[in-house]
Length: 161
Image (cartoon, rainbow, N blue to C red; front, side, top):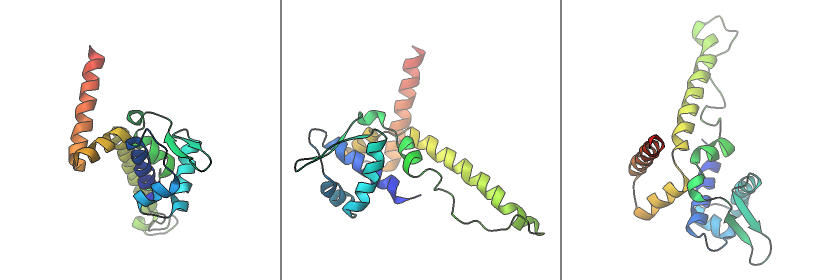
């Protein structure tokens, strides 16, 4: 997985927690702990896809353009990191007389594809608001998972009613 996903989530949670005022790339990069240019690269993608509104100038910066409860980590993952679970290189050669070597890339590719789907589905259950609330409560990721699953069960119950 690449760091752009973490930067995207961090920035959106930061902006969600400061929803009344804009934050510039300096503010965001200081919070993330990386160079402002790296943060701006990710913010550019988020803005282009409708997650952020920007204002130019001395008092400019970034604001969320969608409610934080509607922004799911799965969509962010697919946007900035989709396909990054698998390695850039895989052992084996498709034309090899060795059965292991000739089949390893295809088999591992399918395994990584399944992992990618499972990870994406898991991230689809977590919103920026969930992350924000977990941070505010000082919860561990396991608590957040339980919270998301509990909320999902509540939504299913409401649909049945």
